[in-house]
Image (tube, rainbow, N blue to C red; front, top):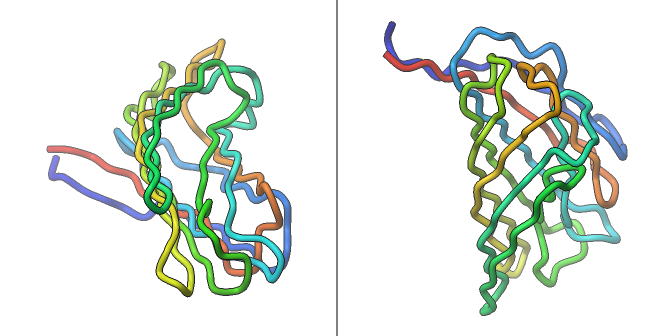
Length: 172
Protein backbone atom coordinates (compact mmCIF):
# COMPACT_ATOMS: atom_id res chain seq x y z
CA UNK A 1 0.00 0.00 0.00
CA UNK A 2 1.38 3.43 -0.91
CA UNK A 3 1.60 6.21 1.62
CA UNK A 4 -1.51 8.40 1.49
CA UNK A 5 -2.91 11.53 3.15
CA UNK A 6 -6.63 11.65 2.39
CA UNK A 7 -9.39 14.13 3.22
CA UNK A 8 -12.00 12.44 5.44
CA UNK A 9 -14.38 15.28 6.27
CA UNK A 10 -14.95 18.86 7.34
CA UNK A 11 -17.44 20.88 9.36
CA UNK A 12 -17.59 24.69 9.22
CA UNK A 13 -19.41 27.03 11.58
CA UNK A 14 -22.02 29.09 9.74
CA UNK A 15 -22.67 31.49 12.60
CA UNK A 16 -21.72 31.96 16.20
CA UNK A 17 -21.83 28.67 18.09
CA UNK A 18 -20.47 27.24 21.31
CA UNK A 19 -19.95 23.65 20.09
CA UNK A 20 -18.98 22.11 16.76
CA UNK A 21 -18.72 18.35 16.03
CA UNK A 22 -17.26 16.41 13.12
CA UNK A 23 -18.85 12.95 13.28
CA UNK A 24 -19.08 9.85 11.11
CA UNK A 25 -15.31 9.63 10.72
CA UNK A 26 -14.60 6.58 8.54
CA UNK A 27 -12.29 3.89 9.94
CA UNK A 28 -10.27 3.58 6.73
CA UNK A 29 -6.76 4.69 7.69
CA UNK A 30 -4.02 3.94 10.22
CA UNK A 31 -3.57 7.45 11.69
CA UNK A 32 -5.60 10.66 11.64
CA UNK A 33 -4.84 14.37 11.72
CA UNK A 34 -7.41 16.95 12.81
CA UNK A 35 -6.93 20.59 11.82
CA UNK A 36 -8.91 23.22 13.72
CA UNK A 37 -9.04 26.79 12.40
CA UNK A 38 -10.19 29.52 14.78
CA UNK A 39 -10.83 33.24 14.38
CA UNK A 40 -11.83 35.94 16.78
CA UNK A 41 -15.00 37.75 17.46
CA UNK A 42 -15.18 41.45 18.18
CA UNK A 43 -14.89 40.94 21.95
CA UNK A 44 -12.47 38.07 22.63
CA UNK A 45 -9.26 36.74 21.19
CA UNK A 46 -9.23 33.32 19.54
CA UNK A 47 -8.70 32.11 23.11
CA UNK A 48 -8.87 28.37 23.34
CA UNK A 49 -10.77 25.20 22.73
CA UNK A 50 -11.83 22.17 24.69
CA UNK A 51 -11.43 19.16 22.38
CA UNK A 52 -13.13 15.82 23.10
CA UNK A 53 -13.21 12.56 21.16
CA UNK A 54 -16.24 10.29 20.74
CA UNK A 55 -18.29 12.58 22.99
CA UNK A 56 -16.23 11.36 25.96
CA UNK A 57 -16.05 13.93 28.76
CA UNK A 58 -14.56 11.60 31.37
CA UNK A 59 -11.16 12.20 32.94
CA UNK A 60 -9.41 10.29 30.14
CA UNK A 61 -7.29 12.99 28.48
CA UNK A 62 -3.63 13.65 29.26
CA UNK A 63 -1.28 16.23 27.77
CA UNK A 64 2.15 17.72 28.19
CA UNK A 65 2.91 21.02 26.50
CA UNK A 66 5.59 23.61 25.89
CA UNK A 67 4.20 27.08 25.37
CA UNK A 68 5.58 30.39 24.17
CA UNK A 69 3.64 33.61 24.57
CA UNK A 70 5.57 36.73 23.57
CA UNK A 71 8.88 36.47 25.42
CA UNK A 72 7.65 33.98 28.04
CA UNK A 73 8.13 30.21 27.72
CA UNK A 74 6.79 27.61 30.10
CA UNK A 75 5.76 23.97 30.37
CA UNK A 76 2.50 22.41 31.42
CA UNK A 77 1.42 18.86 32.27
CA UNK A 78 -2.19 17.81 32.78
CA UNK A 79 -3.40 14.30 33.60
CA UNK A 80 -6.87 12.83 33.92
CA UNK A 81 -8.68 15.89 32.56
CA UNK A 82 -12.07 16.01 30.83
CA UNK A 83 -10.81 17.30 27.43
CA UNK A 84 -7.69 18.34 25.57
CA UNK A 85 -7.12 21.94 26.64
CA UNK A 86 -5.89 23.81 23.56
CA UNK A 87 -4.82 27.45 23.77
CA UNK A 88 -4.93 29.44 20.54
CA UNK A 89 -4.43 33.03 21.39
CA UNK A 90 -3.08 34.02 24.69
CA UNK A 91 -1.54 36.97 22.94
CA UNK A 92 -2.76 40.56 23.35
CA UNK A 93 -5.37 40.82 20.61
CA UNK A 94 -9.10 40.97 21.10
CA UNK A 95 -10.89 41.82 17.95
CA UNK A 96 -11.44 40.74 14.43
CA UNK A 97 -7.75 40.45 13.60
CA UNK A 98 -6.73 37.28 15.47
CA UNK A 99 -6.54 33.80 13.95
CA UNK A 100 -5.35 30.48 15.28
CA UNK A 101 -5.03 26.86 14.29
CA UNK A 102 -4.31 23.54 15.92
CA UNK A 103 -3.11 20.29 14.36
CA UNK A 104 -3.68 17.12 16.37
CA UNK A 105 -2.11 13.91 15.05
CA UNK A 106 -3.38 10.65 16.59
CA UNK A 107 -1.92 7.25 15.84
CA UNK A 108 -3.92 4.07 15.36
CA UNK A 109 -7.27 5.91 15.55
CA UNK A 110 -9.32 3.10 13.95
CA UNK A 111 -8.35 0.48 16.56
CA UNK A 112 -9.83 -0.14 20.00
CA UNK A 113 -6.72 0.97 21.89
CA UNK A 114 -5.45 3.99 23.82
CA UNK A 115 -4.60 6.77 21.36
CA UNK A 116 -1.29 8.66 21.76
CA UNK A 117 -0.65 11.71 19.65
CA UNK A 118 1.02 15.07 19.27
CA UNK A 119 -0.32 18.55 18.75
CA UNK A 120 0.83 21.98 17.69
CA UNK A 121 -1.12 25.21 17.86
CA UNK A 122 -0.36 28.79 17.07
CA UNK A 123 -2.12 32.10 16.82
CA UNK A 124 -1.37 35.52 15.48
CA UNK A 125 -3.09 38.85 15.41
CA UNK A 126 -2.99 42.04 13.37
CA UNK A 127 0.12 43.08 15.33
CA UNK A 128 1.96 39.86 14.31
CA UNK A 129 2.01 38.56 17.86
CA UNK A 130 0.43 35.54 19.45
CA UNK A 131 1.18 32.24 21.13
CA UNK A 132 2.65 28.87 20.13
CA UNK A 133 2.09 25.52 21.83
CA UNK A 134 3.64 22.10 21.17
CA UNK A 135 2.91 18.94 23.03
CA UNK A 136 2.04 15.31 23.38
CA UNK A 137 -1.39 14.00 24.16
CA UNK A 138 -3.06 10.72 25.10
CA UNK A 139 -6.71 9.73 24.86
CA UNK A 140 -7.14 6.71 27.18
CA UNK A 141 -10.85 5.90 27.49
CA UNK A 142 -12.08 3.38 30.07
CA UNK A 143 -13.30 1.17 27.21
CA UNK A 144 -10.84 1.72 24.35
CA UNK A 145 -12.58 2.39 21.04
CA UNK A 146 -11.91 3.65 17.55
CA UNK A 147 -12.26 7.43 17.15
CA UNK A 148 -15.47 8.26 15.26
CA UNK A 149 -16.05 11.92 16.20
CA UNK A 150 -14.28 15.03 17.46
CA UNK A 151 -15.99 17.93 19.27
CA UNK A 152 -14.73 21.48 19.74
CA UNK A 153 -16.29 23.41 22.61
CA UNK A 154 -15.27 27.04 22.43
CA UNK A 155 -14.00 28.84 25.49
CA UNK A 156 -15.74 31.81 23.91
CA UNK A 157 -17.95 31.77 20.81
CA UNK A 158 -16.90 29.75 17.77
CA UNK A 159 -17.24 32.33 15.02
CA UNK A 160 -18.55 31.81 11.47
CA UNK A 161 -16.05 30.12 9.12
CA UNK A 162 -14.14 28.35 11.89
CA UNK A 163 -13.66 24.73 10.90
CA UNK A 164 -12.55 21.21 11.77
CA UNK A 165 -11.02 19.03 9.04
CA UNK A 166 -9.94 15.39 9.28
CA UNK A 167 -7.29 13.68 7.17
CA UNK A 168 -6.51 9.95 7.21
CA UNK A 169 -2.95 8.71 6.85
CA UNK A 170 -1.75 5.30 5.65
CA UNK A 171 1.84 4.16 5.27
CA UNK A 172 3.32 1.76 2.76
